[in-house]
Image (cartoon, rainbow, N blue to C red; front, top):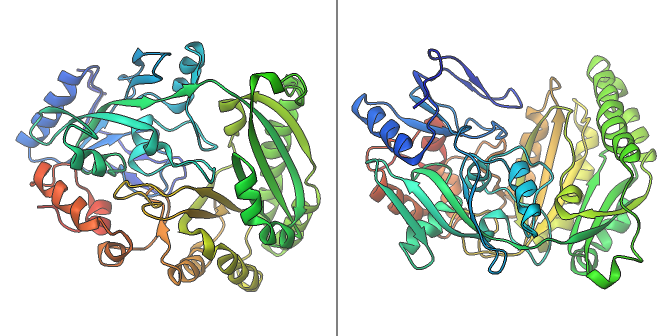
Length: 444
């Protein structure tokens, strides 16, 4: 097992969480993962598996053993006929999509960031958008885990189904995921249409837009009059010839790197230097939105480069409550003493049966609020939480929120079942940390 040179600090991508692990380990196979867990137990240390650090919470932070899985990557099995693919847990979504493409396969749905590891994305409930589609965890057929005693187990709908129901969105609290078996789909092309539409019109037509498109989302700039509406629809093979052309490389660089990152980053820095101008900058950003249409393979449409750093809170609300939530935000955000630089993002997902999924048992709208790094965000996020609390909003596990186990338990019908399975597989809280103690309560 590779041992990094001495303990050192860990920080997440957003700079909102940091830790100083007592030990680091970089296992290269399952035997080394198991040995690392056993060694930590012998030393009385807790263990947290590290992904890419894209959670805004301290979900991965530990003062015990930091288990860096960046050497444990790659696809170990792929069957283009069944779509079943087994991938090691340290593999990033970006690397996974590239290899799936070579097999003529794709993930059925993805979010707009692909830097996360597959295990980290599942653990925190990462999702894309689509009224008929669930989050990434709904694409999982089986999981391999190293448990607190160092044993390697496999769970699925037929093998230890309760562990499977818990571990697909498990916060890393049940064990170290070593491999994920996914049910993928044949690779597909998406026709992307993105255009500014008055925000009132988007809200009024929300249900029909969600129903009419395979993947639908929109971004609302709090001080602007328009929302950027994104509609991505799958093309049958016979329809690809009449679809818009693939975006040329030069234009892709201009649209995504220059306009959405470099130019927007400049506006954000101006806003941070002179906050009184932020509402005007927000109106400028909204007014500058322009339409574009193109086609590409699915993962190149789903994913957008994100170079501008931000902090984020996201809640899942019952889909029928979205209009009320947005109405309250639209009234309250312009009155905040500290203005907001980033847009609000709205996505949709189908109900699922995964115990700690934010979409458990209900068709869902996800509302995400952001603030540019370095700008005040506490009052804004507190306001947001107060609004979604009235409709039983459930927080994204990897994004900032203030809820604890006492407030979370009533939101998840299977919360106590999750805690029971956790006590069964990790009675000594080997995989705990302060964040898990807050959101799940004590183990055992």
